[in-house]
Structures are given as structure tokens and as C-alpha cells.
Amino acid sequence: MQTLQPIGDKILVEPVKNENYTKSGIYLPETANNKTTKIAKVVSLGDDKLLTGKVAPRDTVIINSFSGQEVILDNKQYLVIVLNDILGKLVDTQSLKK
Image (cartoon, rainbow, N blue to C red; front, side, top):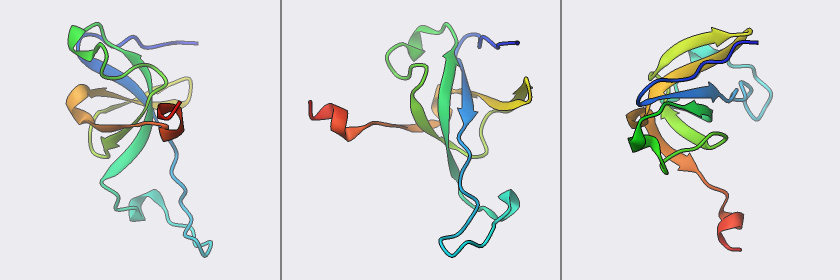
């Protein structure tokens, strides 16, 4: 198994597959999906100090769907992005109340 360790300000993310079906059960291919953002899981970070505290491995983030460089490792799709490609981080609000 191969792994990729990003360098500098790069971040390795794994896109989360979106449901391609409408509520009524109609299949929509990827090309028909006009969403401008997508959800991804952070896999690993480069060694740039600017990344410290902003995102961490296993964080779920929202990124621009046209950002990053696609990488295929062990038949899985990943993206290499930079911090500016991340629009926000999804946070579990239940854990904030504790």
C-alpha cells in the first residue's frame, strides 16, 4: 500500500461520494451535478506551519469542486489541495455543547 505525504502547504483529502439520486429515485450522473462545492475528508497535511490548528487529519471540509490535483492511489481517488481551497470545516455542534 502506498501513501502520499504532502509537502509544504499542501493537503491530501479524500472526496466523500455524494448521493447521485434525487428524492424520487432518479439517477443523476456526475456530469449533471452542477454543485460548485464538495465534501472531503482530510487525510494528511504538509509540514507548513500555517496549517497548524486550522485543519487536522479526519476533519470533514467543504472545498471548491474545481480545486486541487487528482491523485489515484490503490484505486482510490484523492485530491491535493491548498488551504485556500477549503471553504469551511464541518463541526459537530453536539460536541460543542458539552
